[in-house]
Length: 256
Ligand code: ADP
Ligand code: MG
Image 1 (cartoon, rainbow, N blue to C red):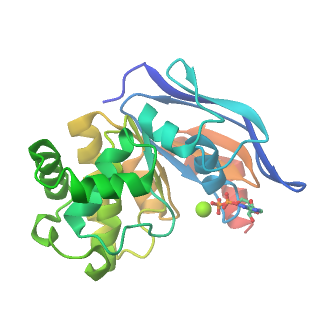
Image 2 (cartoon, rainbow, N blue to C red):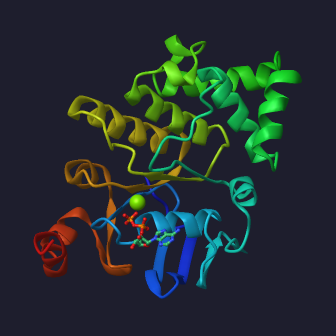
């Protein structure tokens, strides 16, 4: 399903925290419509990579390009407006909004620079806006949460909250979706559902997906390409078969 068109490139992307190099000289090319995994031990720089791509962390060196634009240095809201959306390792839902309101508030983030404005717009002005409603219903149906639309986000079971986070990210109509440990805390049935959902997102919308995960079965079954990080450095990139056979991957995992 992926094409040859390169959507996102990182070049020499580096982040250090007072001498600790969390990410060193990172490079990747993401093609439109591919599902790519990023794996590595705890502390290997996976979340730092997402933070540097999405504007939550300012790279110490290097660049990120989305299509022909340099996006490194942009604020998170500007990165969302370009067409990149992410989820976080921990939940960041609007807990006092309903499930539907969470999705609708996020829809405004593609055009609004401020989360609080987006929430206000949702409540005050767009309460009856049909396009926003229609889109929210479609996304809730996609992630299997239509029946919970009017519940408060904080009342949902954990697995449902994680799928709501994905619906919320999709509400900004991204070209690229970055998921940081989306299967954490899910049981094996929920993890299978998640893999199906990610495939459907790619197949139905052509979205490029990058998944950071510890669940090796999920990564190996879902991803067409995998990049492996260790101590902030890329140690290999390849198909699941290539990565599984790579001596440095075995070393990084078995040696830990
Ligand atoms: P991963 O997501 O692969 O577990 P991280 O990207 O979160 O790893 O972290 C990589 C390294 O950077 C770790 O050593 C971590 O402690 C360090 N680190 C991450 N964020 C910060 C921060 N804000 N301040 C200082 N050190 C950080
Ligand atoms: Mg992390």
